[in-house]
Amino acid sequence: MISFSYDAMFACLRALVYARGYREMGLRCLLLACEEFYVRPGLLDPSHIHALERAQSFKADPGACLAAASAFVKRTLELLSQQPAST
Image (cartoon, rainbow, N blue to C red; front, side, top):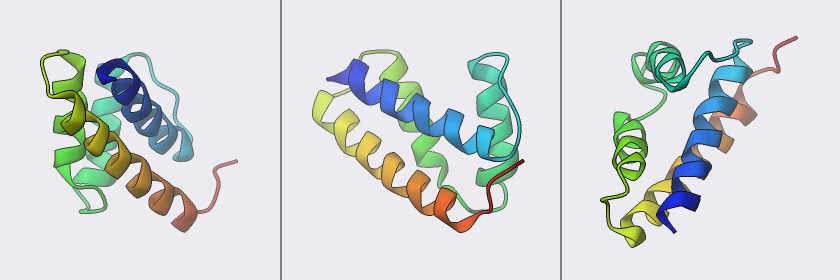
């Protein structure tokens, strides 16, 4: 369950960055871009990023990971529906 939760959160991170017209060169690039475009302006709570990092270690509680992934997916969908698609 942790692996699926991590995959969902990673997909959210990627979708948010792709929506801004960027492609990643690795997880670190995704994290930096998401921080710049979404966390700093207050559009995304940093707890979503922290949850992804905890899930990456596979030492987190599976139920907590699932809840965090669900919340991240929900927020990602909200953000993506609010911004115009990049061309």
